[in-house]
Image (cartoon, rainbow, N blue to C red):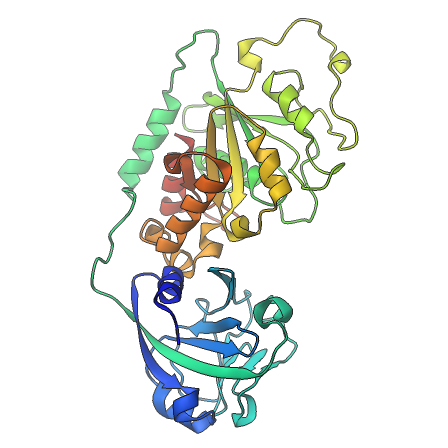
Length: 411
């Protein structure tokens, strides 16, 4: 029942794969025995369910069905639901089992049961394996009109065909670090480029600084406060020079961190404050007040800001998992800023299971490519200025592929 366009969109989540139909409930029956007869020991599978309300949803597991009776650990497992044209992907939460491999019908996290008790129904059992809203996923309509299971097989055609060329080598990392260390501005009065990082709450602005700082320190650091709170953890305007630990000197750029943007009025960074930052009026450690933008008479110095104090480049930071959910108000806020721009698309590993498995698959992923194009269209920046990155968040040690992406973006 999958349309060609939906097959393409699901393949974008899975990489360059071929889908082959194994089981179709309306033909083979809704009994668990029929499902296992056709799907056991067939490798990775994708389940696609349809209900009376028109929802298309399901899940992926990379581990064979085998009726082993065991709880299955599968870090590649995910649920999905078509919300509009784009399938939203919900990954299995860390530390939870992806499913119970028993003789019953297919289940995910012992939370979502398909063909429950051999009937055309889906059962939601409360659980924590997947952070999913059932009303959003299938409209709370539990009656299935069809359930299909596909074998997922890696395709040999056009494999490793990158849509951007990246060298994932230690030599390339060293080359990028050298280019950044030796960067010289065209204007002699500006010794360090000031880069303003702005974006929605939780997108990864402060984490980007921490990641860049970590690379040049040679170890994981967390100088700027970062996290995933609902409101901005950054409340001050902060300017962060970066020291090259190898050479013991300041690098030729300053990363400027701000309060997160929020769509509500009276919350988050004010658009007028952004203008004051760009003009170099707001000092380091200035505490933002969402209810009252910065006033020029608050400055102690009466002289105009020098070129060195102004912002030279604006970087938008956008969460790759939330691009389709960006509100019109937030889009308008970003569009109101007019200055040379780059977009960092963060959390690419969370957005695409293929990339989570191997970061080098980033520029093979057609799903990530579609997200880059969506960002370009919505924010009005060239595709070449949208740079996917993965910040350091849970890691304890630096990782080559992560470094190459981050340094490429900075360069």
